[in-house]
Length: 222
Image (cartoon, rainbow, N blue to C red):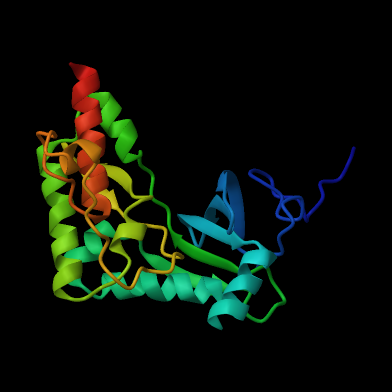
């Protein structure tokens, strides 16, 4: 009878096979996705299901050389900055901790796992974006503007929608982006510049993108 390998997890993914060195008690379950900065896993830590963001060495080097920052700490601190505002707590994933700062383990950011769908998936399901959800987005943008909190446009691009009772709640979870310093300019399209377009230019930022998506969905729905 073959003895089980103690280094191989009974279920989920093998960190060594993923090229990761993790502390004891951190179990990889599934791979969620891979981007330019790293890979996100669904994991288990201290009895809870979490998101584990493992950063690529190239991304970590870029942040260190260009910004003089640790990318994992940078993302965690931006995440925490949003949750300092009580009005934004329900709309942000909970940051947990960073591992691998000493270089002995893989550099990772542990965060609350957001199990939800994208805004476009929700829109395709209903044929439009519900009005209450648009108002929630406006409230988030207003709080960020009132408190001069940067980055909401970048952070809301990857927002996930979590179902709570009969409503959908947007939750931000990707905070590694570098916020823009100035407000985005409103640019009318060609027909509007010629005075032919019937609709006013979309507002800047993520709410403008939400409006454009909603218009497309309503048009497709007839």
